[in-house]
Length: 308
Image 1 (tube, rainbow, N blue to C red):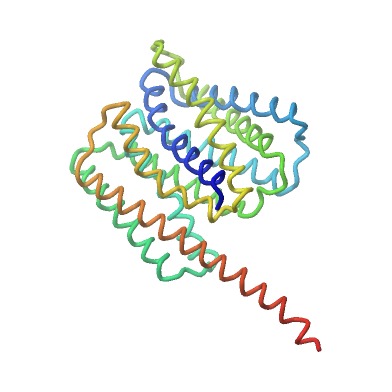
Image 2 (image 1 turned 45 degrees about the vertical axis):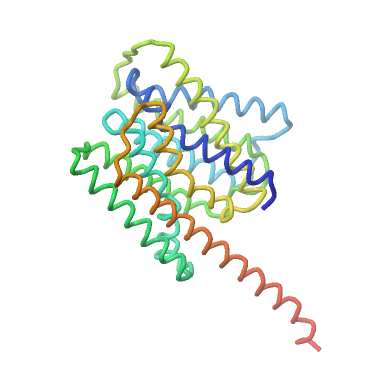
């Protein structure tokens, strides 16, 4: 992994983690689904226009179209929509912690549903991640967390996990910015219909709201998604996903610094355990991928000798 990939991974982790804090500011002053639909409309149009200026096309491969539609609905509409609604009643740090478990859930789903081999290190990582979540949830439930908001966050990360599993290997082929922009436009359309039917457009205008909306539209919304696709294209999905282990730390730290959310001792311990679990799972998957590539290479080198 070169220095450029490392910088891209760190930038993605910071941008992704900060999205929960800016979202918490937005939903305190504006309808969550309407705000998110507008954010995706603006981000999507910017992404598509820049992509066209760069010579990219919306004539995507079949796999790219499938990934674009699935992620547009499951990631942008369901995952983020449910999180925006949830953050009206729960803290940004808790939403970030739940969302950061997605790599663990993907590994678990791959093991259970697709028979992906899980090395001992990966299994330890999964168990550690579960233990960290249980530790944090136990402390939060005793402190009186809103169960409905918590349930929405859990449903959101499950939707993102299913989407990730559904489009495994279907995002290659270039046109990254165009794919990102189209995903956001699909999410905007899906959210706009629900928002029109369920929300009343009442906004408490302030410079804080405007700054938070601009930031979440351009940085986590467009920038983080683009950097992620570029990082995956550069080093592969398994190695790129290693940077997710930073998200629990960064999500909690940014919420504490910007919003003044309290950090309990059990939160800190739980976040550390979850981060260690994510790192263990990703390192295990990376080693497994390397071992498989080495085995394939040996098989290919041995083929001529076998033929003789």
